[in-house]
Length: 336
Image 1 (cartoon, rainbow, N blue to C red):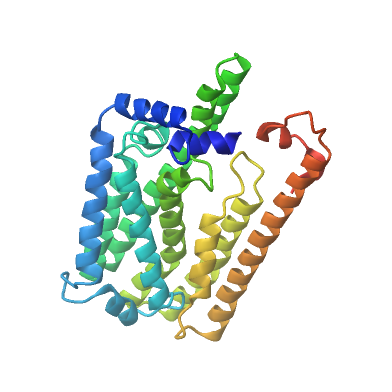
Image 2: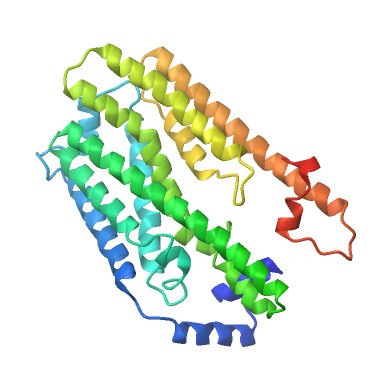
């Protein structure tokens, strides 16, 4: 029923009567406000600045690909991997910038409270990083990337809080005997994966945040190279950063909190580790490759474990008893 409610709320494949209800909701939806405009402005600023710096080479006459080649580090991902990652990030964030203007999404708490002004701040930090990195101000670029990561993590955290609030609201509506349609709309407001709303409203920030987590050790090492520091500093930064990122990803995969596990950030970090540049020394290539393989193995095993857990619960639940997601999580003896 939850899946049908999500589809009908998005207006995709809904019966004629429900399509009319969705159309009425769109007609009465609040107008575009300052948060929506800031999101659009921030994205356009980030896109334009990043294109001018990374591809056109407007800043100091050198492209980002040439800069990464110039400041080669032990943890620099392959330039092809870097290009694909940025392309996917700007594509999905562009979809968000457009979707959050639509009547169906623009007033959702995920946008107004979960994103708020922080996406615009993240885009401003992204634009600043593009300018500083283009002019080869390595320290300023690293500081800007740090602010970018903080802003993205704030968005992810705030959206997680909103999701939990909406789930509790839906449960309260059902307990109070409200109409199932009202509760279904509250559940849809969480933009649960793999629905379309998830890819439009939540996935872009996890993708961008995961990439900055993976790229931060490289940007720190660029500072060491640009400042002419001893190679030992770069080596220690690389050796410490990779296991730290690996540990954080394992935590995201093995959490038992609502909404867990989270696969996007670990998948992006594994992607970056797998794309370790050929210029790296063998030790770093082996370490990053080991991290990538381990993360992929844990993600696959986690998906299989959760699937088997859900099937076990269904097999041991009487057919005439409905079990919602919160009740399924109470089966501690079959924790995945």
